[in-house]
Image (cartoon, rainbow, N blue to C red):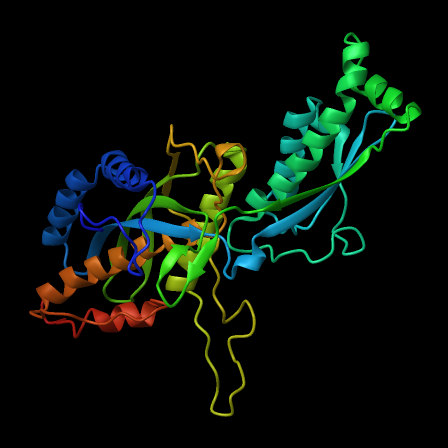
Length: 371
């Protein structure tokens, strides 16, 4: 944790929203019942020689956005049709994270129409050129703002016709605008404001904001085989004012499990000729259903709006990936108990991924004479 009187990054940038950082930590401590469970883990380990448990809690601060500055721009096109339907073109790539759904929600909110009247077109550089990478967990921020910008313009263009016929519907106002030769196709554009960074002086703002979180994980390891089981994980995540809590919780769960696979399972191996031998599901292990925590609790931090995000939301794609370090540290905690029983003390190394053989070896030589 950062010192109380110096809430800055290691490169000297003040941490905005540091109170949210502390809230995530405290709420995770409370909801996970960490202190009581710490005692329970110690008690379990004192009574068991070949099975050990470990628990760890970690905080998170993740800078949302990309560097360099020119990547903080986005465009979108929104078209209105005479039947009251809407078509959105934007540069963000849908890869299962729900960006299309959020674009529809934003347009629905601005235009004041149901989401079933709004559609998203497939990505095309014919329509939206120079699209920034869908990365850095800020795609919804950028393209959401671009969509909002286009929709705001369309609302302004429809305003006179809505005023003339207040009891009409959206399709009526669009038709009236069309027959009055009003352009119903708008390009929206957004550039993230106040993004500057000087490497020489180390001053400015390299990222628009940070997302915060905390995770507590408890594991059980088998000292004889090195296998482990993820018993419970509690995550408290700052997502600002969520645009879609269901999507955000899904992103948190998925990001965490992806990080879990990276840190605990997915090992790349090559033969002496440099050929990759972990090249299929039979020898490259990815997280499966049974790897999901037996108890998995996700909490979205309340009352923490983000003034720099679209509708006060925050990006949430990549940050939860890093919270999987809580599992790795929990395994280290369990190994430490096994090593202590074996008379070993001091620092030890547990490389990633912490596969079964590495966990087994880290436990040290086991005395089987007392089996």
